[in-house]
Amino acid sequence: MRERVVTFGPEGILVGIVTEPDAARRGAPVVVMSNVGLNHRVGPSRAWVELARGLAEHGVTSLRYDCSGLGDSAPRKDLLGDVERSVLDLQDALAMLTADGATHFALVSWCSGTDNSHVVAVRDPRVVGAAFLDGYAYATPTSLAHAKIYRWVEPPRWRRALRRRFPRLFGLDLDRQAVGWVDEIYNREYPTREKFEEDLATLVDRGARLLFVYSQQTTYAYKGQFWDWLRRKKWGGQIAVEYYSKADHTFRYRADREVMMSRLSSWLLALSGA
Amino acid sequence: MPTPLFFGEDPRRLFGVYHSPSNGTLREQAVVLCPAGPQEYMLTHWAQRRLAVLLAGHGIHVLRFDYFGVGDSQGSIEEGTLEQWQKDIVTASEELRRLSGVRRTSLVGYRLGATLAWRASVLSADKPRHLVLWDPVVRGKTYLGELRVTEDTYASQLLFFPPPDDPPSELYGYPLPRAQYEATAAIDLLEEQLPAATRVHMYVGRQTGETRALAARLQEHVKRFTHEFVPEEGRTGSGNLLSKRVLDAIGGALSADAG
Image (cartoon, rainbow over all chains, first blue to last red; front, side, top):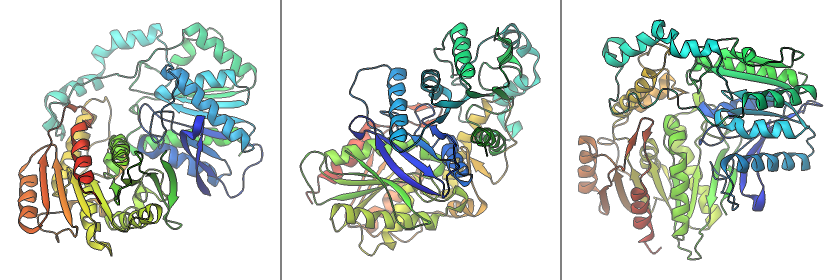
């Protein structure tokens, strides 16, 4: 396995690391990852670094890079919105990898990083797979019942309220200034549910495979929620959904992270024919 | 334009970004930025970049880098030790000398990085020209206690989290191996060998008994020592908020030395 720095995009402003295996698996897509929120490219708890190195052990090449203006990448000079800019960045990343010999790609994204991945995955037929971690989620009657009604009878919520009120009883030492800043800060501007389903159909009908991962710290509230918001019911087994009901948004705790990363890694390896 | 690169030897290659002087005024000054420890790495990455850009704008060569097992550098966090990270600072200083052609480098360390830079100054064959301690970890036990409070505060927002263990085996989403915990807990800059640098500067965002005691110790024993209290401009639930004032203060101190 070897890692090398790459710079690409307009005037080479974008910075990334390509991780290459000693022996590349023939036909495997190049896996592409970038920033999670405003954090730089290594990923929460170094997730992208570990994923890249683990994939390389199985013959899969990957790129992790910083979008313009984040991490080590300089800002673009054009006055575009965040999503438009990050779409251009991702397209520049694929162009750089293509010039290096890559023919198809798997995109892995997390939180707001799913915005550009979603757009590019739909537009670019060379994208054969995409994994979205805490990406778009839509309400259903059952999820609304969780949010508005069931919450009042769910023991974990009462336990949390008690923990905040009497932290010492639970072995916690809290910074009172910081407690209660926000519960669910991960809402963004989503495509309409109809547009999302239309995009999904475009991807699936051209043969792409998709993985959606959800944590508890989002509006995703129960295991089957994904399927409940779609009108189309047959997706040819090309869509996989995982709901980790006890994990936080960044999979901060090792036990949660290992389970999720193992699933993500095996999904990517299956996509690569490994 | 900053230059990202790997340096050092396999299997301990380190990732870094070299910022060449950007305003045309070349000073005989080169600064290695020593980042915070793994737990505060993500929170402070942007501060490192901004400080590097600011110093390069003052005509100073800058190298910022990731410790072994952290960020894009080789190795895993479990393999990282304080001793290794101190050596990494020496390796980074050598790399910066090679890149810049400047013979004597300076060290700017933030939080745990300040403590590591202090120790690395003693290890280096050439003593640093400046050692800047930015919110240094004075006593490891206090630092670990602060990390624990932030960790618990984060956990209190969640519906589920693993029961806290003591000593913690992970903090801020990063494993904390027992040896790393014990080595960190043993830090005490009020007792350790004094740093070897021509000039020592200390900037703190929060005055505490420990920072006052450290300032008093350095005042007494270091001939060229400056100390400035630069209050934090705010505070968020996720910890430190970057203060532009402290960046300006550090930039001002280093650029005042004509080199």
